[in-house]
Amino acid sequence: PHVDWSAGAVELLTEARDWESEGPRRAGVSSFGMSGTNAHVILEQASEAASEQVVGARRVLPVVPVPVSAGSAEGLRAQAARLLELAVSGQEPLDLGFSLGTTRSALEHRAVLVVADRDELVAELSALAEGRSGAVHGERSGGRLAFLFSGQGSQR
Image (cartoon, rainbow, N blue to C red; front, side, top):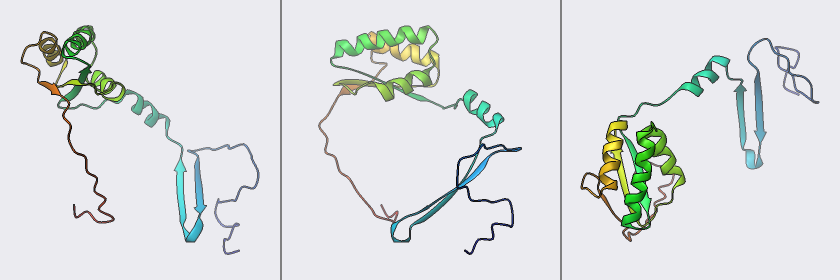
C-alpha cells in the first residue's frame, strides 16, 4: 500500500508476458525471508560487446604451476613424457596447468613445474621425463590438518 505504482516505469508483474526492450533488460528480484531477512538485487543484461570480450580474454600470468602426479616414480616420468608431447605440439602452459590442476588426482608421486612460457614447460617436462634434477619432486607426507573459524573478525 505504500508504493506509488503510477509514478515511474516500475510495475509489478502478476503473469507471464513477452519482454520487449529498447535497451538492456533490467529486473529487480526481492526475497523476504524468515526473521526479517530481506535481500534485493537488480540484474542487468550483459551487452554484446562485454560478452565478446569475455570469450576472447586470457589472463597473462608471470608463471604457471603445472602439477604432475602418478602412482610411482616411473609413472611420474612416463606422465611427464606424455605431457611433453602435448607441450611440443603447441599446448599452452596455462591450459595444461589448469586442466591438470582441476582434473587429475594427486597421486603418491608428484611434481609441480613452475614455468613462464612454453619453452620452460618443454625444458622442465624433459628434465622430469628423463629423471634429471631440473624438476623437483617428492612423495606425499602425512601432515596434520587444522581448521580455524575466526568468526566475523579478521584477527587471524
